Picture 1 (cartoon, rainbow, N blue to C red):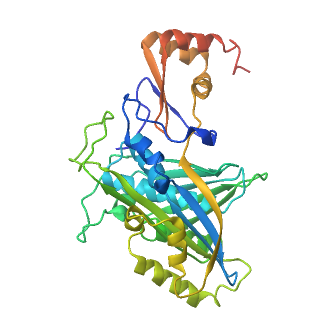
Picture 2 (tube, one colour):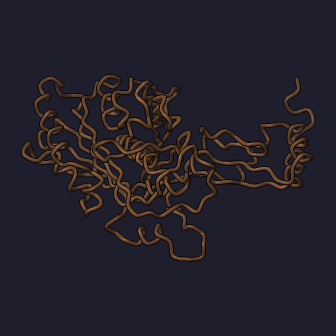
Length: 366
């Protein structure tokens, strides 16, 4: 079921990003949580590496995204399959943002008509690193595993729809492109988008692995069907290889095919990350037997959202004075929720009246 604003609850969209200093929040339960343990382990730090093949024909990027995907799962209380869907889209968005310059951003929407209700993620490059956030229409939606025992990512996403990509490059207008969904598995769909919409032949492999039977402590809506225990993210990452624009795509076709064969031979990216493979390892493995890769950038990545109580107040103001006063008279509290990070800001009826009184009586009237 989708996540519409409930009675007495408002939604906070289009939040900007905060500074990189925030990192990941603890669970707030007064005890040492798994997120804090992950952050203190240098070998599990999320980051992207990028480089160029020795002959200059290819760009390669690889990311470890375990912590940021786990943070997305925790915040949205995702089912197992939903975690894989959201995690792959956020990981793909991080790789795409790593190709941008500072203060540029990319938004990825995957609308396939499946039970997920659609997935949106955007990523932004700052002077300190990469920030990403994301959400889906129904994070508790789930499906049985495939006959091969894998999470049915394509089934949850759906195959009747499009991938939409919007880039804010700091220009007057945004760049927007789209392509039809090919499989719903995300990696193939993003590679197809790059090939047909931006004319950049690409190979992309994304993965999310979950383990354990830990259940989220967040309040859950009654599910349509009994979902499996959520577990937590034990490995997540991705690889993207692209033919550079200045080189002939057809001439590079054989090498692209060999890169794709290497990615296939690697097996599960998430399993490799879980077992300790670094982004550097992934990037070099993609070109095994082809040529050397010169890795240049090492960019930290994190789940981040700069929603705040002040921004929530601005959202309330858009309702207008009359509607705010009506809300204050009807209920004791009103919630404003950020879709991207699921943070909730609660306002008492007295606070609502204060916000209403700050709006000029003639505001919005012609």
